[in-house]
Image (cartoon, rainbow, N blue to C red; front, side, top):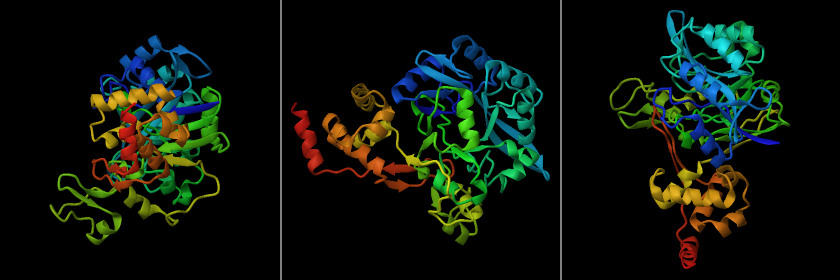
Length: 412
């Protein structure tokens, strides 16, 4: 069966996270979006973990269920450690095969940090020790380095990361099977590093609010079974890992270099020419994802290894509607139009990925239908994000025949 899976989110117990990140809301939004399998987020947090135990029912092997949505047990932790007298922060996703295994791991992790302080706890532990600790409990845990290119808190991050997976995980590198691309990179950027060819690239929302779940996702041809899905990821089974859904990476908030406070955005060649110095404040700029990729890449742009999982860049439907209507994403006008379209076609992913163009044009406002089609084609204008500032993706809107068709539709 076709599974759309978002394997990395957060609960309301993580910092800067919506109070609506509870199981009931997550189920509601997952149903609207068409997400089959959703991460729980934050199983390390004691209060959230108790809620998971109370509200989720065991379903298929290794997975749990609330109403219509299947859940996979997931947490993200910040491993804080020192190498050569320099602080390192690397975020890791943990997928757990059962509540019992997760509970046992939680008890061990209290030795390294206060799990109650934040849904994404800071643990004074090296990533390789985290892997070792989890696998001694169960070989079915899966550790995935999170958003591997962001400047802060990531495996390859310019500020505190490494130049290779081996530098970070040492003798436990053999137990790392996948990397999360993060919002600021897509698979094509990662394909430029031959050292990453053996890893499965996964894409997840890292969402802090229900409306943003599924903004990146993975599509599998698999049963709803934790062990089968983990096997697909571990073996990089390109027959059953159908594709990933990606942000346009330029929309990520660390794609280019720059200084947000100075309103300075710089492409990597500009940063090199300026020797890494902001032209306004004359301090060092925040080096973004594209710059790090260029630094470590041993292949040219456009290179593609032999065995890869396809991907599609996509914009969430609410953002497309907001762009067309010239309204905020959370306004009543946009929400009403969004819900009307979902009622017609069932789910957001059906609209973004599957509904034929002629059906869209028959049943949706011509300008919105045209915008969805343009996004599918990648026909968008891009303003890259930098230094914590999200990028902007603009959809060129037609004003001729489509505007006329819009007025015609209003007559009926």
